[in-house]
Length: 377
Picture 1 (cartoon, helix red, strand yellow):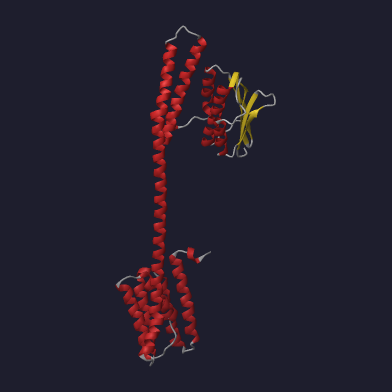
Picture 2 (cartoon, rainbow, N blue to C red):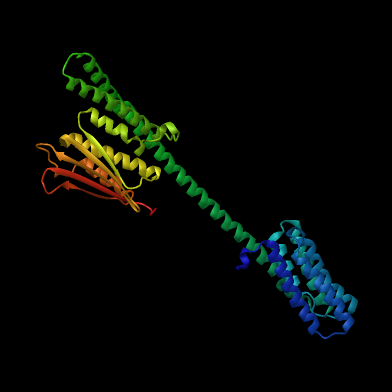
């Protein structure tokens, strides 16, 4: 496992153990008298073990590390290699984790310890200062640099996250505003016209109580279709305004009977055949299939004859096929690509559906087939 993923306390403990092994090994290799060796080894292991402590104790750890070589040199008059690795790590910790007075105090203690030890060993002041710079100042500066770099990278990540969040918010705002504009257009223009159609159809039907029954049925179908269109438009308006309530749910396959009844009310026979084992569909696909069937029925009303339309739902283990069949009306240009068929193809394409449409070999029967892939059941 990558050590970077370890918790900080585990990493601190690992650093302390390595320092204890390294410094303890050098103490044992000095081959000094046994008593001195044991005392120095005990002091070395004790202060190196302190490196596993929390960051807030870094000043005290630095003070203990700085004291050990001076105590050994003064009390034993012997420059045994003791806690060299511990001094370096203590300097790094002080630079990385301390700020202000404690950080500079730790640097001063470590530097003073090295200078005093060098001077007591009869080295000149310049040499002592160089040793202090190498053993205390340099690790301290590396710790400061590492912390500053980490803070800089964190700030860059924070700014990047904020910029990404602002960009998403801007896109969301633009989409919301566009949806609001579309909703206003639908409300102010389309709903107004559909309402007018409904009112005029109702007035015409009521004004002709003893007229042609076929005309009366057609006017009633116009009323029914316009009311259904109003309901659908209000659902769309709710969706555009972000209303996800149950009342705003779009119709699906469970509403096919209402759709077929509207076609029948217009005087066109509409038949539904279901084959295979029915299964639940994802909501988005359920709405899409409903809209495709709605468009197929609309095409049959506009371009078919009075023999009606047959819609088939064929459930297979790994697919759903929606098909419609109707006789093309006289003078109908069924071979051209209509906007409705383009819309069906686009809707199906969103779910990797395949669309086929055209006249059968008899030259009169128009057939449209849309196949959607499904997860195998």
